[in-house]
Length: 248
Ligand code: HPA
Image (tube, rainbow, N blue to C red; front, top):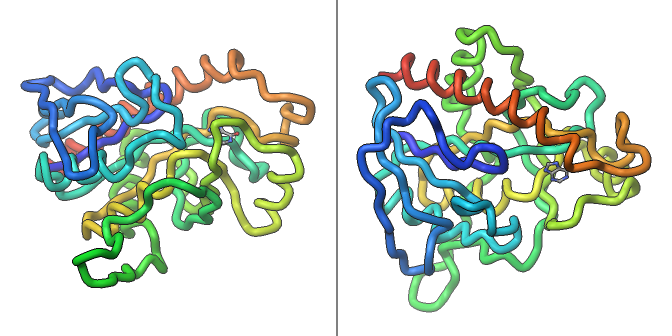
């Protein structure tokens, strides 16, 4: 079963015919909300809104462990597509672009970030050289092609702590480090999926130029971001429809 974690701008999936909703309890506390089960085409899908149904949970307070545990061990998800909005650092990734990143730089802190937290269990260091699942990324890029959408297929995702946006100097530093896009929710989500040995890929929607880039040299106006997100999330829905059709 495919799990989709929806971020800002994607709190529900219109194409998902919801058959049932389920509250899942986990050893790590409450997930962001109820899980919605249904089908897209002939593919079984479980959907979770990362920030809660009313978009009330900020990035640093998302219970990533509970979300991942609920999807994989509660609902039986075998692969995960994470949809998230990001800011663009790289000049060719204008707002509205869809990106399937291939690497991560993590600058988040203070978030419970592992299922292997010591105590009784053995110490485990999962391999994270390639943080996203390559074949899931390829299938997403193929679905994009099918849908006639232009997707950027390689980008380094920098995860920042939020909830504030970055300073222009922080974005300069992230760029020097090799980052192409910046978001607040990509970690520890991706690492937790790896700890659960579940293929995971991100489908990012560029909502705005990162601080100091493009027209964001002075400030980032969130109200101007909304229409860009709406249009791009429409494309995300189309892409996910094609992804499920190719799969089913
Ligand atoms: N920075 C961090 N996270 C984001 C941004 C940004 O500019 N836009 C959307 N999510």
